Length: 451
Image 1 (cartoon, helix red, strand yellow):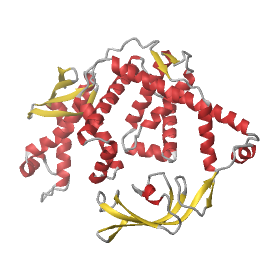
Image 2 (cartoon, rainbow, N blue to C red; image 1 turned 180 degrees about the horizontal axis):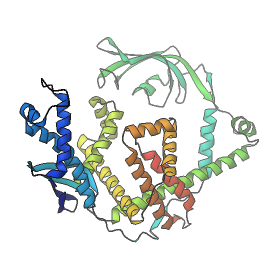
Image 3 (cartoon, one colour; image 1 turned 135 degrees about the vertical axis):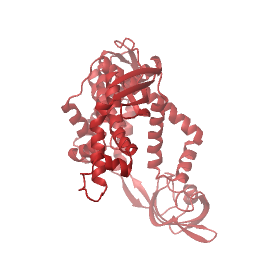
C-alpha cells in the first residue's frame, strides 16, 4: 500500500491511497466466497460456485464492490496511522481507480489541530473565599427546622405559606379539561408551581369556598389555551415549626445542644464551600486556557457537539415541539438565540477538550485499569446502577473510548492545577488536595457516557 497526505487546511487532510492487486486479492477471494454462499446455481453446492460462474450471474463489478467495501476502511485506518493523523469523525471517501491491477481512493477527513501550549506552571487563578457566615448557618438551620415542622388545621382564611387541600376543575367553553383538573391536591400557597393565578385567587378564602379565575393550560392536548379554573378549598393547614433550642438539636441530630449543632453545620458548610471553591478553580483554569490559547477548530467538531446538546434538551422535553416552545418562552429566548447560545457553549467545550488532550499528550498522561474502574463505579452510583451493569452498558454503547478520553483529560487538568497558583479573594492559598478530589467529581457530574 502506498499513501500520501495533503494538508487542505490546518484541520483537514486529504489522504491518497493506492492498494496493489495482490493486497486486494484476499478480500476479492473472500467476496467470491461470500457471494457464492448466497446464490444457488444448479449443479454446484452452496459455497462451491466457481468465480467465472459468479461473474456471469452477478457480475464482476458486484464482486469488486464487495471487496472494496472491506479493503477501503481497513487501508484508510492504516494510512491514517502511518501519517500519524488524529482524525475526527467519518472521512469523505472517493474511489478513483478500481480494476484488476490496483485500487486507488482518496479520503478527506478533519483532524485535530496542532496546538502550541503556553507555559503551564504557576498560572494565577483567584476564587471566592470559603468563609462560612452566621447567615449561612442560619439558612441551614431554617431548612432543617422546616423538615421537622408539623401541619395543623386552622379555622381562618388562607394565607401565604399555608398548606391547602384543593379541588381544581379546568374547562374551555363549558367542556371540562382533564389535564387541568384534580381532586384533593395538596398545595403550598405562594409556591407558584401549580397554576398561574391560583395563589392570588385562593388567598383570603376559607375552607369550603370556591373561586373561579382564568389561566393558560401548561400541559395536555389543550396546552397553551386559556381555560376557566374553578378552585375549591377543602381544608387549610399551617406549618408549625419547632423552637431552635437544645430539644430541637436532640430531635434533629446526634447533638445535645443547639450550639453543638450550629458548630457541626458550620464545619460541614466549610467543607462544602471548599469543594465549591475547588470546582471554581478548575472551571476558571479551563476558561483561562480557552480564552488565551488560539487555534483553529474544525466546524464538524462544533456541529457534532451542538447536535449532541440539542438532542439532550429535546429528548428531556419528550421530543414535543410545543413543550420545547414553552421551554424557550420560559427562558425568554427565541429558537435562533437558543441555537446561537448552544453553539457558543459547544465551541468552548470542544476547545477545552482539544486543549486538555494536547496537555495530556505533552505530559504523556496514561490511564490505568484501576482509574477506569473507579470512574465507572462513581458513575454507576450517580445512575443508581450496579457497577457491572453500568460497565456493560458502556461497552455495548461503544463508549469506552469516550470514558478513557474523559478520565485522561481530567488527569491532565489535575496536573496543571497542581502547578497553578490558586488563591482566594483574600489572598489565601487554596488547598490543592480539595481541588484534586473536586476535579474528578465535577467531571463525573457533567458526563453522560451511556447516551
